Structures are given as structure tokens and as C-alpha cells.
Figure 1: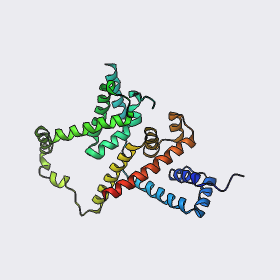
Figure 2: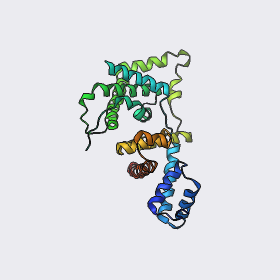
Figure 3: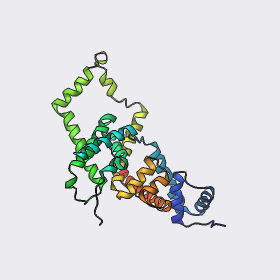
Figure 4: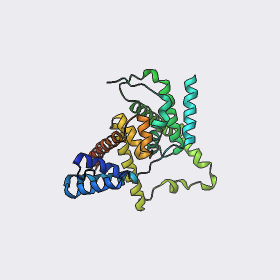
Length: 81
Length: 187
């Protein structure tokens, strides 16, 4: 049987992983259990969630594959010279 | 400190999206942003022999890009540039005179304030990302912005998944602190 209790460093990493939906049910349970008795990690988790919401709200744009290919082509041509 | 070497073949994949975001929030024109990013890489290639390795590749490319953006604004503020802008509006004769309405933001619209806040937040975040160590910034951007799979990032950087999460966690903590400082300083 794995450990139920984790320390604050582990809890903070789990909090971060949770923002990316990376926790399995066991890890999520351990994390919740820790938050239940640790005020510091609870506060960190809240801030982490708030930060994640802000990040999600931002409009990130990415270069399309075609745009990337065209830039790569220009770089390759320039490197040949 | 290990010597930093330039790897132009990987520039587009590593820094393309980051530079594109950086540019688009400053020039508001996707086509121009792509051109500026492309020109930045070419300028980097041309002046590669002058790169001393004192800064990271990304910091160096950002400094080139910043100069390109300044040049772009200089150009559009010059008389020739202004004429070009006027011409582009006058070319649509049907819509002549509509441009002020089209360009002016309606501040009564609550979405405008949101948009402005988003833009400011985006710029602040980019500046904070620029302050992160190279590796942290690259991995954070790949996971958070590019939404790459954990395995893919781990393979590229030759790290374990636990290492990756520690790096992302540290990057986020530094970013949160940096954003808090910026937010309180600006407001």
C-alpha cells in the first residue's frame, strides 16, 4: 500500500500537476488529504488555480505548421549562402 | 558557465511561437508579426558570428526582435509609412471614412476593458517568462502554451517526468512572484 501522507514539497508539485490534469486518482486523493490539514499548501493551491485561470484566459497564438515551414525554408536558404 | 551555442535549425520549433506571441501583442497584425519573427531569425543568422554566448539564445533573439519592432514603428511613423497606411485605407473606396469607427475602441463596451487587461497581463507574463532561466522558460512554454505531451518534452530535453514537473513547478512559482510584483508596481 502506498503512502497516504505526503509532505508540502510533494503537495506543491501535485498542485502544479493538477493544473495540467496530470494526477491519477491516488495522487489526487493524497493531495486532497494533505490540503485538508495544511493551510500553507491550501493557500498555495488556491493561488496556483487562480494563476492557471489567468493563463487559460490569455489568448495564445501559435504559428501554423505552414508558417513554420516557410520560416524554416527561409532560414535554410539563408544558411546555404 | 557553459558556453551557449546557437542552433539555428531548432529556432523555429523552440522559439517560434513564443516570439510570435511576443510580437503579435505589440503589433496586432498576424502577417506583420510573422514577417518580423522571420526577419528576426534571419538577422540572428547574419549576426551569429557576433554572438558571444554571454546570454541565452532566446534572450539574444528577443533583443533582436525588440529592435525589429522598434524599426517597424519608426517606419510606420515616418512620412512614407503614414502614406502607406493612408493608401491602404483609401484603396477601399466603398468604405472610405469608416476607418475611424472601425479602429476606435468603444470603451463603454465591457469587453474592451477585459481585452486591455488581457493584453497587459499577456505582456507582463511574456516579460516574466523572459526573466526565467532558459530551460525553465522553454519547458514551461512547451507544456503550457504549446500543450505538448509530457513524453515529447521529456524526450527532447532528455529528462524524466518528475524532473519536468519540478521544472514547471519552479517556473510557475517564479512567474507568480514576478507577476505579483509587476501587478502591484503598475497598479
